[in-house]
Length: 269
Image 1 (tube, one colour):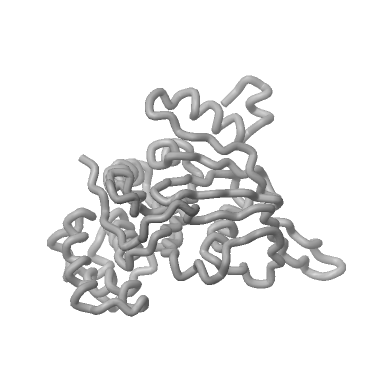
Image 2 (cartoon, rainbow, N blue to C red):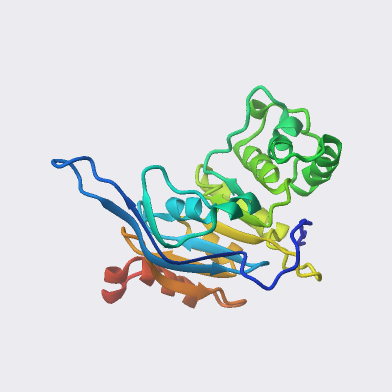
């Protein structure tokens, strides 16, 4: 069963996110140290409203840096050239980092309200929406639980609920299940696929744009409409693959080949 989460996003034909010719360079460590590090080079990415895009690539290729730029932020100390996201668009984004970031002195429901309250939403309205989402997120009955009383999967669901609650039209998810064991991660992927975060099931066109950073090719194929592959540093787009509705084996081979071109040329995956 698929649950489509309501959003407050307006209907629009413009892309939700777009960067072009994006290059991000970090300064080196001095004349005898490492020279300047180019994290991303000439990256172009467009994400439509109601679209779920996964970004995969080797460690250190600039995936998390790309998310920061998509949030309208300039990474500390970095030089950004090309056409990045307008910093004003940062108000349209909600970002879920790799760690759940739950506050240990707040119970589950008050933790869920943090982002909405920072965004200036009325507490009563935000709390009513949060209580409704606790059921959709499989957390009903745990509203008064402390973070340490929740399993790893439950903590991540609560962190995602907190991210969704303000109703931002853009969700940026930075390996949200990366710290979970394989079985829990697989269950979480199936659960997340059923949530329809992007709003594919909405008839009014007011969906979300979702960008997920992951190392897991199978996770990307299960959740996303498109998978973008970044190369080794400096990260550049080497493949932008629409995910087929049926028969994922070919898409999986193509993704693995793009991630490891030398392996592909040797006939391995």
